Length: 215
Image (cartoon, rainbow, N blue to C red; front, top):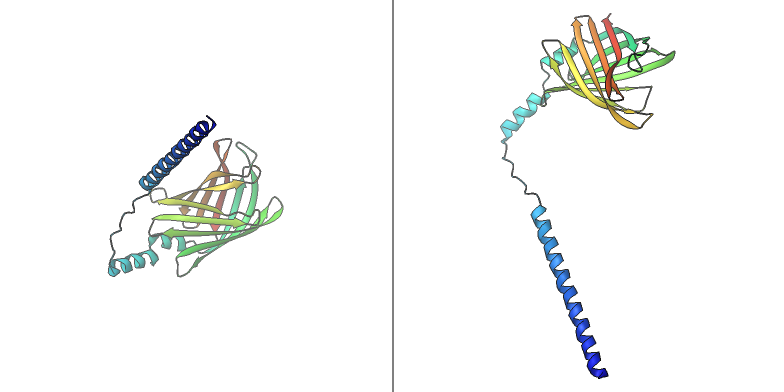
């Protein structure tokens, strides 16, 4: 009787072990099939002949009309600056001098700012580029009042003579990114207006305006 019972126990354990192996193999096969079906199928790109590629690169590297507009600003500008630190807040004034020059054969514009803000020395540097391939402007700005870089992208509107750029900056108080918007207006040959709009509590407000006059 004991021997019969032992044999039954061995058979039962063997049956359970076989069931586990079958289940494991089934799951593994299913997982493999699932992985295979989720793999993206790469699309073959049409080949580009060397003449077409060369022409595209030449067009990309050659300054055009937008770069001429940027070059018209080369020189020294006096900047009358107004700041608002919150919606409907009291405006604060400041002044600075901007020196504009073109870089790399007229492909990029660089502006250096020096002045005083809230009684403290202010220095800033901006770059402006027009990308022939994407047909848009890219603007970057850094200064001695932070450690981050502002990067905005936008288009030029011929009818209003404005460039509207949008990007993100970081609120150092909250440590979160927040959107901003800039509007740059060509008022006349010797006057430019720059407006910046920030977000606070989900509401956009005008945070800065700069009226620049060319010397």
